[in-house]
Length: 120
Image (cartoon, rainbow, N blue to C red):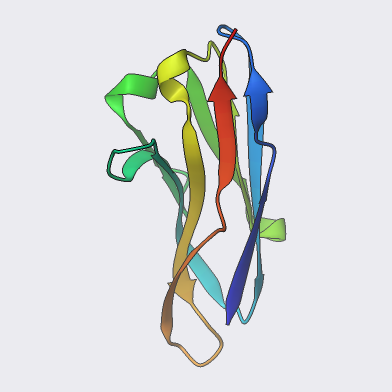
């Protein structure tokens, strides 16, 4: 079983910055992909950014140039640095981690979500 603990959300003014963290723990043999998704009220959950074990990244067009995803493989932790935040970035942000456990079983786990609110 794999657990994810997210932190770093909050209230910030437009143009401000926040840094989200997500730490994975449990029966983890390897992690393939770590990513961040978000869901705004009344909308579907959408991809924000993902990073592979080889550090390849992919971003939603709406956040390119403003958000940066990174990971610490030794600590099974993924980060999302969010700069130049806009009101439309307001959402619950969810961490997602995919990999294999010590029994060579695939796992895909979600964090509990952290609220990001961008407002003046």
